[in-house]
Figure 1 (cartoon, rainbow, N blue to C red):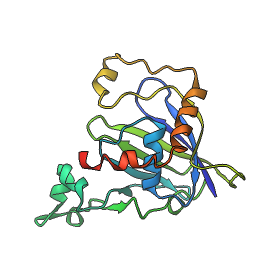
Figure 2 (figure 1 turned 90 degrees about the horizontal axis):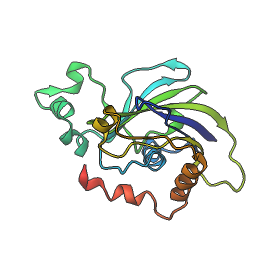
Figure 3 (figure 1 turned 45 degrees about the vertical axis):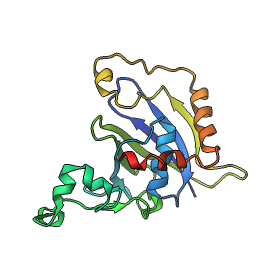
Figure 4 (figure 1 turned 90 degrees about the vertical axis):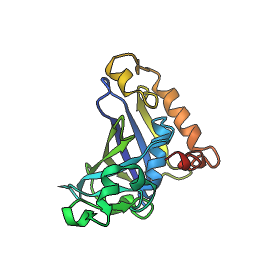
Length: 202
């Protein structure tokens, strides 16, 4: 099956969103790369998913990201201390991360309007609201992932302060060009490798 998501970048002053289609059996890691390409992020920062609604029921404390014990923990002070011998996360009831390479979208997005929050860059905190709009049959001869509509530009990396000071104009009426650029990325051979090559920055 094909999932159609509307992904909205929150708290940037004007509507910024992408409507994307992706195979339901894709992993959250694959969705992460799709979001990187769709919102023109470079992948230099950490990220996580938080499931907010699954099977039509509100959810909390279900977080999906890089595995515990990896580079993610070393860079995040809270998670580092949670995993130290004197303060295990289970002792304080903190949620553990599910591994984004192993979790499939279909395990959590069951019904239309199920949703998640995707956070990229824990300094600037670019939050993206992910809503499952439709569950579709795949179209013949269509390559996925696919962006079908978009609204306005994404802020540059590391620009939260400039956004707060109203120094960045995100208005872009030509949504078709945005969509074309995103889909050109998806059709480029080994497009995910550009993000994988940045792992050493994290």
